[in-house]
Length: 426
Image (cartoon, rainbow, N blue to C red; front, side):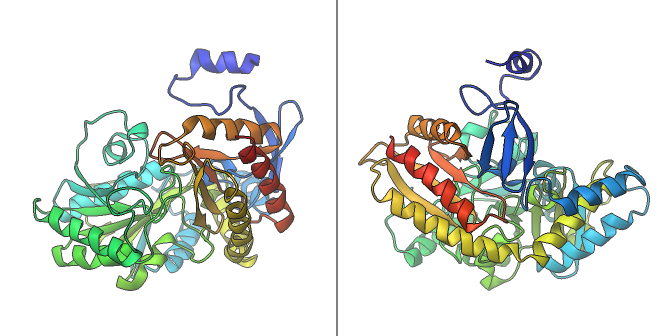
């Protein structure tokens, strides 16, 4: 082990996980590649947990950061902030939410925290609906609504959380149903649950569950939920921290796969918009965003430097149609991986869309999770020059593949070949 690893263990909490038996120190990156402290190059298929959205060291972003830092780095929300207003205007217009207001935070956790505050204040209720297998952050309130035991270290919470079926298509009591019957059964479960509750503030849901292993329901489930929620006055919060900005290829936001009943009341975002800079936020209808009857600010949310990065990054993404690239290259990659998986007994499912792809590993011929196999593939791909992630609600047995959205066809094939070798070695 490196000396840096031992220094890390001496000062960083034990619960801050590190990938790999011999943890990696990344020193720099360019495009879709990163280098470690020994000078070895890796193709990056995880992007710092879906955060390096466009490319490493993207010149447009680094230039915007340097220029803004040379003028003023910090001011807080107590002063007018031109980059913050400009980015808010662009996000509000792109959100699909009418009369939208935008509040910036520094992370997805804080964004979801803010959305929960708004929902409970607006509805005057502390009851929240969440999805099984979900993940929404590491703060006290977001841990309390997370439906994944591996990421929820305490049962204490300021909220009463009730969990709904539907976030995972391939497991659970409705897994064998057709898509139509699956949606009907999940809606019936929601209706039954609401019959046992007082007024509920909101449903929070990831259109594609990130930490849960890139699982998702059939398209239209949340639209069907929305029709039920509307009858009860319950808000819908779309957690777009991992699905936003065109990563799924087919849509700019994940909620648009469920948009038949209209946009969500709120959406939360983070990760990719900053391309590595700390940006999160909430978009909500004005009446919801303005419902707080006490003062609030954000010291670091909306920082001029991070906003400049976000503006440059979003501009690059739109001008170069990276959503379209995610659809095209991601479509080729997922079909290539499904072809590989057909010959590997340990692969239960290859799922996802765009450049958000999950490979679930189980004990061959069963549905039992196989976390050892996932760890083995993670190690083997690293040895061969590819970085991927892992997750899943069943003992972390899903591989997570989420490269920067500028991935080329040649790079997709390079990564797929390394994955094929690692999977066939199981």
